[in-house]
Image 1 (cartoon, helix red, strand yellow):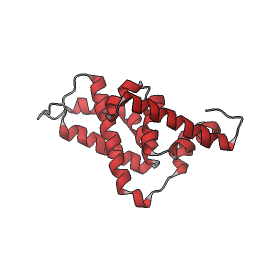
Image 2: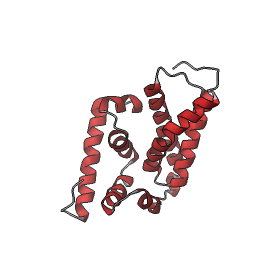
Image 3: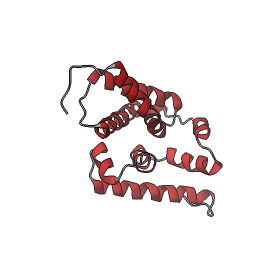
Length: 167
């Protein structure tokens, strides 16, 4: 990607923040399991957007770049706090609307990061496997395999609690 030396205008920055902040926050929360860390990661992502001033082909390219930077930022934060990992499940209960959603969210938050990312991009963001493979720089087959494995893990874990419920 070609780098520009021109900083985005204030209107471009405001538009980008308005359009993508909620989506990026949900992704960060899914990966970091903590509201404060998620907010920090989103801020770091927008800071990189402003300071790096990348040139985008179109709006989809911009969104993919923001998602990739967000995932990398979360990975960096996760590495930093690996030895002091905490999960604030109170935050999870605040964003879920029903007990069923809370139970599923609890199980998703306990998945390894590579599976949480795939689940979020596929089910929440609505990306197809080919698009996810480009965002994460892995093969479409790897995306499909991770989706399958994540679903299996969720079925296994969620099935323990209540055999009548389906995800």
